[in-house]
Length: 188
Image 1: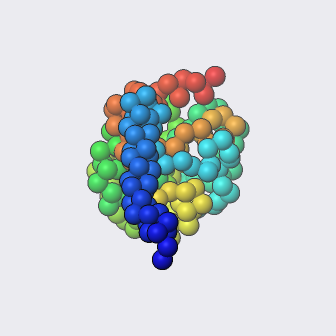
Image 2: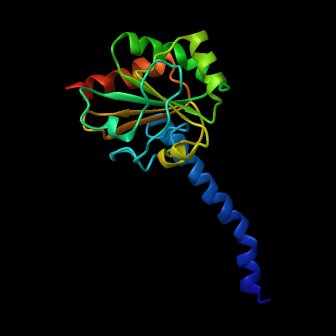
């Protein structure tokens, strides 16, 4: 090994540490300015129509199923919510979905990898905010949507274009700061 290559190997850890430090600085700067969202995961579907799908209904739920045909030419913005009875954050989110439903915001639900009897029990216990409701037991439709965990919610405009995606439970803070302004924006 030549002396020049030894020197290069000696400085390699310093160069790697400097690159890591610059990356860390960029993340901190982005968090300070609001440009970096550590919870945000980009969705390939933003600005596009929902994928084509037909799902079976959740029997005995009292509401019709959700299909991709239901997500075009809408009277106003619609939320599509992937949820499950076994999902603890879904319980946290549920009061916000109930509130939105009472206020007239259509919420379409897709029970993700959940047994129908468990989904029905959850809705009997916590209330049913869903104007349409289907089940995706194998999770294939969720994969097409890019869902990586529940709860996950999508906002679609009147034309059925996905305008917003939120991974995690919609809390009252999220509802006020993020979702309500978007609902107003896409209502007109």
